[in-house]
Image 1 (cartoon, rainbow, N blue to C red):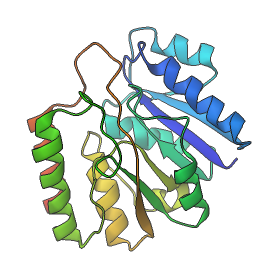
Image 2 (cartoon, helix red, strand yellow):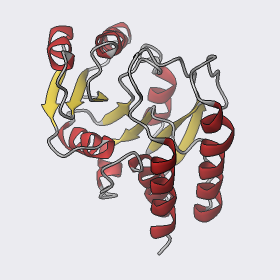
Image 3 (cartoon, rainbow, N blue to C red):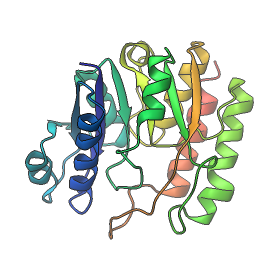
Length: 226
């Protein structure tokens, strides 16, 4: 199998079906041998039922956390390549060809860059757009001699075996930083492409906690300098 589209999920009944349908249609339209894999992290709403009815393969991740769900998903993916993205419909799973082009060109990690694309009004809080993301990404650039400008984009593609060799361990949101910094330290072939970010389609509170998760990202950046 060439591609696994991996979606971590925690109580995403409002948007998970839309994401899966777009992902499955993308595979069909582009004649790609692939799967949509939902890594559920303990949903108590209708997310699992909707995912099943939409035709995704579901795995259950008992250990809580964004990173935990993704690590379990990576370990269980059938595809040579993985494209991961959030379940809130803020990323367009029907437009993944730019990622596939780079992956087929033998890039190990292909990052989306929201700041080079279009950020829909209301899609990103101002303090994330102008303070949190730019500051943490700049720190990553300096500390790890990286050219990547959007370290925390949730839409990214990678070669499964290349990333598994990094032995990623972070269980929370800081997993996003850990993947990039370890890829840079291992001298993997990395690049980034412009993507669009759309407004979150959920009505509940986001899973991200700005200050807490920002500090966890910073600690990971510093800890792995050794």
